[in-house]
Image (cartoon, rainbow, N blue to C red; front, side):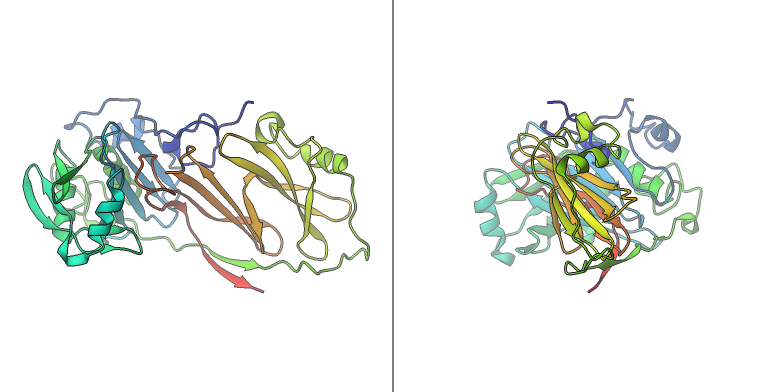
Length: 387
């Protein structure tokens, strides 16, 4: 069965089909260290999404990726080389604004995960140490059993950022085990983050050029997250027609078919005999659902909002939903069968329609942990619930 490319997934996933493991695309050009500081070259060469200064920015190059959300907060995640038996990931996060600092966290995974985490949970007795080119940069902060990671110190973050701008051997060491972080691809995503936050050529840039040519006043400020109001549907609402909605499944299929650009790929099960599910949203609008597709480890349900009388005017929300409850539609799709990477999108009911409230990935599929290593949003909002 043929499946479409999922346009909602982050660019680094480069999804060929829902049944294939997600893998980040590499840049089309080969960067040299001397030339990579050129933002013009990066703009030409990068495979990314950046339509406006506040739009989501996404890029993967080799073993590193960056995702900047609609508030201009950027998160950079790096991993071990793919052939390593010691999975590791480091997350660097920086908000927009000239005074924003870079924060860092580290997660370990793989076959030694259970024993390692057991030791880390002992706190001060066992911690990881950061080594760069053989130099001991000290221990990380205590391991968080809640978050499953350990924070890097400010000194470690500064040393790591410098090391990532050149070829370096970066290791997290605990007792007799060493986890090596790849530096391959870091420069490209650091420059992309600088571009997204307006830091190129400023003293606060992650990658400095030959002397700062601009002041930090050129750095873009943070954007506020959209304020959304979730209206919990009244499932006991009565129709303005004073009668129960009724329509044959075949009629619903025919009615909604025109809302899908390519039914064969987006919703191949639309015309089958599986049942429709209908939920009332208010006195005049309905949420209708139908199974759209199923793969080896993912499935998608079609969701439409329509009037309960003519003109029905069905509006497609998504063909990739996995859950609906109390005015919230969610789509959670695995990057591959073992579930070490996910893509998630949420939509909420605002009283008239469903609007996107969240979109994120958990990063590359690198065996860090079940459910993915990090939350790397490209769209965030603040949701208030009105019942």
